[in-house]
Length: 479
Image (cartoon, rainbow, N blue to C red; front, side, top):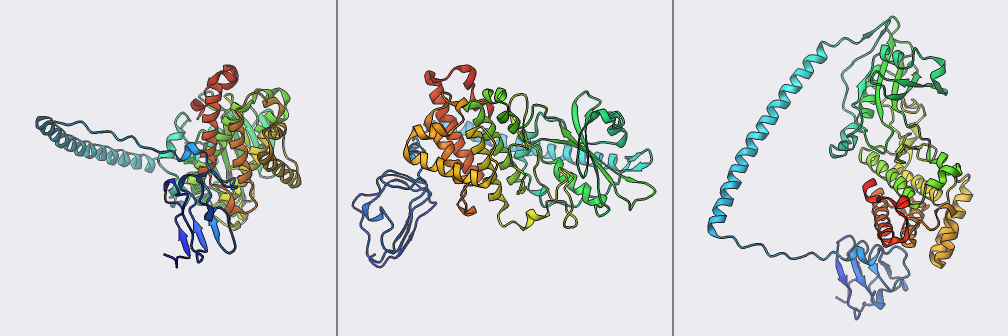
């Protein structure tokens, strides 16, 4: 054993304490015990990177270490309860076996029945599609077979359950768009940019929506747009501004001229996160529990987008909207058109081709999330990179020095509404998100874990009578 030079035990879920009398031979040059569940004190021979020896101890629950990347002691306590199974007599065992056999037979019959219903439903849907008429006045909506999308394939089925409660996606006709906007009445115009106009509209069921009218260049083929909208239609989550439907039209007599696409968006009328931080009246409503709920909603929206392969998103407090219940919704998420380089995205009319050239767009989203987190902590927008770097340095120093200095840095309107350990946990993960090295930034899952731990600490502090019920609410119910 004296000839061992390299030991890598990282990411193995090892638990318990290391023996205090462990000794290291002189040839040992590298030891990695990171990302385990180790507790107690670190043996003295592993206590520091001495000479040419390198020791990686991050993400454990060790005590005698200067590393700031250690988890709370409670995280590494995962003792399982051993439950003795009840003793069954022979008669009960026979009955159990019979029940299992009958259950298997019943399950097979049920599966066959469901498959039969699905086949019948698909057959009828194909019949309806063949007979559909896609004409609207002097325009013709192009309908073409949609090729499989690399993004659409990765939208996971379980995550689509988050779309419950939202209206189903709908392909509108031009007549419906004109009816919703009162023939695009100028009084309903709420915004205008290089790519088109944004109108307020009312659907026939009475719901208020926003209709984005985009005049697209000739290089946008109807097939590419159909494929693009097919991908967008699958992105339904309570922390994303939902695209409720679309209408693609081209001139019937001039199919090669510029086409138009109408995007029907969910109307979130309560303003952006920036509006709430800039307006002192709205900012007073955003105490620590509410800000945790908002930032955790943003992180869950990013997690959903990353699971679907959507990275390099335009994440900032301007593009995070809050509904009437202060639930966060990301409005400018990025999906590249499957067409020529330099094409604008129908979702927000921006050139997104450079996203494909970024080395790590997923970690770029984490950095932007860190900027949002620090702006939520101080209660105001950050206007420059130097200001951001200075704030990050101050947060790091306050974590190392004293709780009072950390309290002095945060928004004064939140004071008295947070547990210090809850605040400290969020500040630590915020600093990690702003790491200059993309590889040093955490994953969105790691961010969510720290936020959830912060929520649990806050709820324990609140239940002890430290915060009035009007300000705290039940954070768990918000997630």
